[in-house]
Image 1: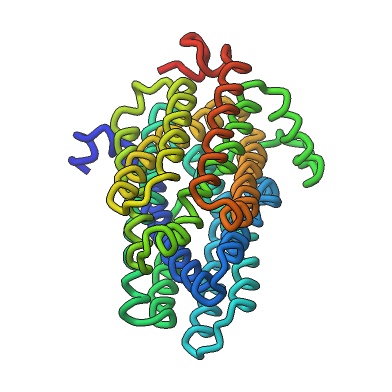
Image 2: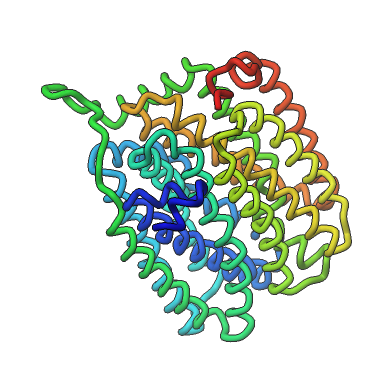
Length: 416
């Protein structure tokens, strides 16, 4: 605790709930990345198709369509309770996959089915994490807390990717999944210690709106609040145009562009995550000095430009370097984006709005589904160029259209 008192970046750990939530989120992210490497490589090798890999990657985000329902469920039964049920589901599905691999019954069909079920639940995990941080964290700790929280996904992407690749290479997929199940079990146990304080979203005597009514209310709030609408559009754009190139398609880059094995894929993922982790740490240290709107727009443009460069590289070392820098600027885009939404949204609608925010992640599976045929037809370089240029053009358009809300120094989102 004396270390926490001396280090401003560690201030969020003064909150007891966060001391449980952070390691729980870390283990969940670690397991996600291990599964991503194990199953992504299995699909690519067993089918030999980049289109199948793209479809598999898109299935992981199927649940973005129902993310608002998770946010509304959190408003009703508590965000921690929803998160506990979700993480119990992860453990059960991982046990099923472990049984398939250990019994040598794993084929693309059952793996795709289980991935579809997982894809209905897992995309909302980040929503529930952010809601719990916003619910339990004092306002003056929020930017630092979001930066520290983001390190769970970034650091786990390094450890999870490398450990997942190493475990498969050394032990096989079945025993690797034993480790995944153990990580999920520890994650579930730690989630029990997360705070349960809930915001009152209705006054005494009022009735809770129906799910459809709450969803309509959330969409109306997003559309009629200019800064929230702009952030939502930008979130959809980066998921569509930026993340496919540094997500599931990295398995194709490792195998067919760089001629690497699954360990090489792990290193590519780890380089992007290492840059993201560095960026998240800096945000947690200096978050109080960041102008959220300006930082988000500028760093999105830099991130997309680096993706354009990465699309044309054929040397693994240079590719890893560019991925590291790209990951760094990605953090300075995504963390301010989440902070803006948590700060400006009416607390009574925060769960629903953050659920609607997860619908923006549906840009990623759409981008992946389009990228598969494009890569097979035109190659990775042309596909990456198309996505990056498209992203840069529309980011500039968003910045110009909502200049007063996102770029002006006097805008509320740029207050320090």
